[in-house]
Length: 444
Image (tube, rainbow, N blue to C red; front, side):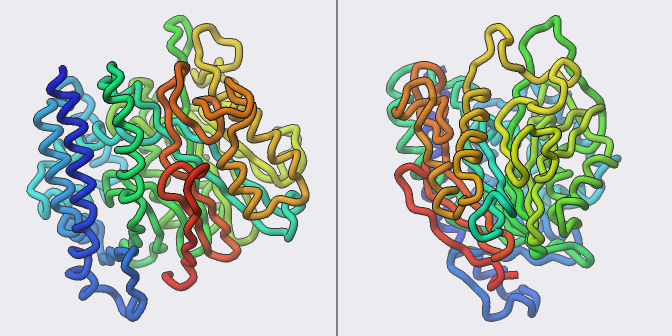
């Protein structure tokens, strides 16, 4: 076990160095960029232009080959997929049937990296253990803002307890600076995906194909998301069923939707996968997404397999809040948790962070109603009040830091301003990092 813990730390250090090579490797792909992107090269932007799903996976593999190889090496050493072989085989069958385009992307990625498709999916299991899940999001628009602007904020968090390796104090001390450095490199590069005819270009952080954290598309559709915690109470019902993986639905939305209404229709009319074991790509099942568009519309989608709730900025009868503000954390707020299987306030042996952060996010939006600006959005992401300790950094804050309650950390934050086709994000926790600006109107 100690050996595995040391390997995880070494893996992260190795990836720190590997990420620096990505920018150098990108020049080989720039030669194949469509005329649309000529003279728009950016040292922090990588374009992946393809005419088919297979070609997209192929080029992604050439671009990130070294990173994929190192990740796969550690998957093999740690035997991460040993207990997930049935899950992986089932997911491959589902992907073939429900989303053949994604299977073709995996096929291309496999050909360029030399990694079998089943092993590429096992990489996602490693991703789920290292990144994301416990997040806080807000959206504000129209009358809630000072200048009739639209904003979407996300604090991208991770709970390291799920990794299962942080059982002694040395790693707890080391992990925070390691993750700070890794995150700086993780979102230092923005990928621009152009995946074929009749599909919209979109920006994302992370690894293409298997680990995309989508941001904004060429039509000004912006994205944020939060993981949903399911109950551990074995006597409670959890809604399950087959369908399209939520990770894939998010990508389809970015590629095919130009506004939040189209996103809502896509999710409502799709058979959504929901597997309570949440292995591999099912880790995104039950997740809540938040969307904004260039026309000033905002939307939160709570969902499971059988149930879905579309909450728009003007759904005041649902939210009980003024028009133009939405928020979310890690439990179903507007769906019936007893039907979906989400945790709920007052449930025994449930950590309170999600409920505390949701209440605080709503409070901040209402306190600043009518005067919300970019700076106020930045301050929302940095908030350290009303967690488990008043005015101190802790794991129940919107900007989260490890403590005795939870070993959880806000990796980084982003803010999307769709009307200006602009996004802002930090390299690390927003409370001690500056937001950098990227004008995507100059890229798309």
